[in-house]
Image (tube, rainbow, N blue to C red; front, side, top):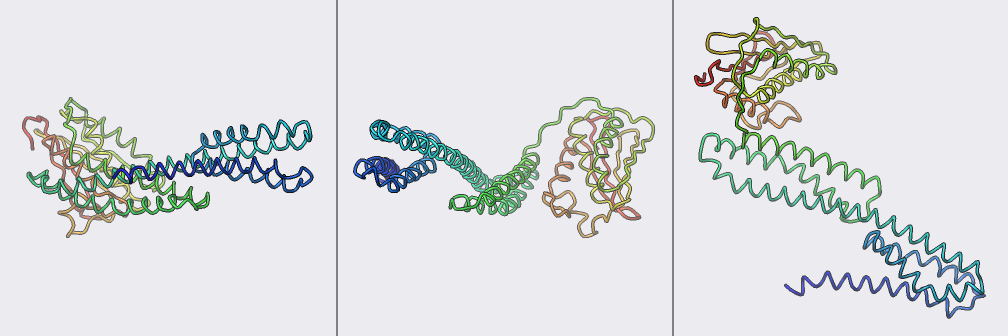
Length: 368
């Protein structure tokens, strides 16, 4: 075990020794080669590029600077002697070492950036693997109650969902790890990592919202005003789809005791879904009415709807008819409404489309 830990350290020491030895050899040879062989001296000067670049690539910009300072120290005696003999050659050599050192520093900065990306990638990969392992271990424990059992089922589905982006991240990491990718390929790999990490973060956030929902913070809220603000927000999503959005409320709706942020999340989710389900030129209606014991808000669209065989699965975790959906939006919405003592239902219209109906009790101590 100890030998295995010391192996990387020994390897690093040998690399430093080889770089330093290379600098010393290149600085020593000009003492033994006659000044008349200027072409050989010129070649030796240019070979200083190698240790400086290698130091930058292996040890970053700090390694390149240290190597350049060491080269200056080793070359100083020869430069001092040569300054009185051939001042032009000596000054040219100083400029070349400075330029090569600058190139080494740039290479070191790029190498440091790649190492940071690789470190972050490996860290993300380990975290995702830990999440995957924890999800697998928690499946049995999450089956103890009805909600926990549902969370356990969706954990298995989530573990399946994260495999594709995890495979993309691992593939991009492999390309970066080999170190021979072109700048264009490196940028593509970084773009893949960023996109898939964002996708995974969104998926895991939705999962946590479902598995560990926040308790509602109740306060008296005007559902009519809340629905109007949702219509205003959702109107931005209709511009690119040419969908008409209307709201019809039966007078002023009475205030209900609910969490306005969570209700806004539910209504916005249902409205956006309705807009996305509608064809170009379609219409989405938000209607509201009140009775003696409850307040109802309905969202009706003219989309393709859901087939009869899938109607019972609409609020199931990970059920979706979208190509890019996570299948957790309606499940979370249904759970939030249930926490408020309300009811969220869906049914096919007589004509095309679906209607989702949100019902909340006017007295939250008397749930529906």
